[in-house]
Length: 316
Ligand SMILES: O=C(O)CCC(=O)C(=O)O
Image 1 (spheres, helix red, strand yellow):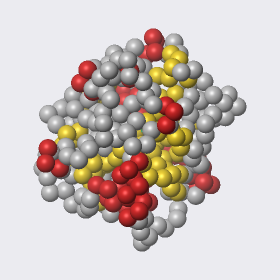
Image 2 (tube, helix red, strand yellow):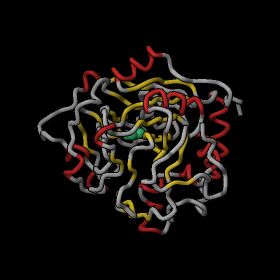
Image 3 (cartoon, protein in one colour):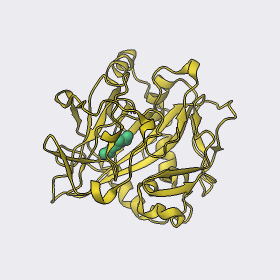
Image 4 (cartoon, helix red, strand yellow):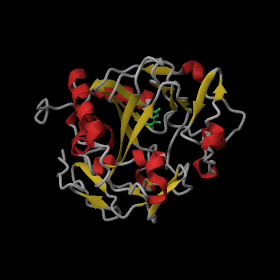
């Protein structure tokens, strides 16, 4: 693996200013393409072993729902190191300040024929469970939401479900996450089309949360994030984002891996003992936030310093 520990990936003031204007930064390289391909070939097999995963496969069908894609950085050594990579953390701290937690990671697989991800914005992440998962202190709150760093573990093109962004939309929420959505995988999987594009939200219909049911996302302003394996993009979860459908039957699965970051002052899963989403429920008993940079002087969050296999998170 490339030794990048001594290198500094802090973005320039111009890049940070551009990030604040657009709501995203990148794509930028985290791994060489051949290194990413080699690592993923090895890690996909290792990840099949869920024996040390923090969410029990048998726990409310976590193995069959999207929750099974959550937080594998808490047991996988590769993913634990990935969320702490300097290429990522230096960019995240340039926006969030020196003391930063990773509070969630998620795999986003798309197979040939899969729908695109609905246009959406996430602020408190209450959209599915009805309970806020992250709460910023009133005094520190500039935008809310979380910084997501989405890494392409495989290529992401217009045909293989690349991400799409609508730049500059991160300051106005067009969705009300407290409205509640209905998990209806059978109905949603009946391939809903919107403006000629097949879309859905992993068994939900994100349009249910629109403040104005007649509003339409300004898709004419959308930009596509075409990425090679090993590239990543950082964005506010409150910026309108989506992905294209996977329309290339001859190409393999597209896989994105998202790490989600907040400053230590943010409360994660306040007054919550479980996550109830995507038709499953998992206990947070073994869950902890991970400090990726600086120090955490707050006592409000559950914390872990090693994976369930004893690997220490390399704090920046
Ligand atoms: O990969 C996708 O299709 C969606 C990703 C996403 O919504 C996110 O990372 O927040």
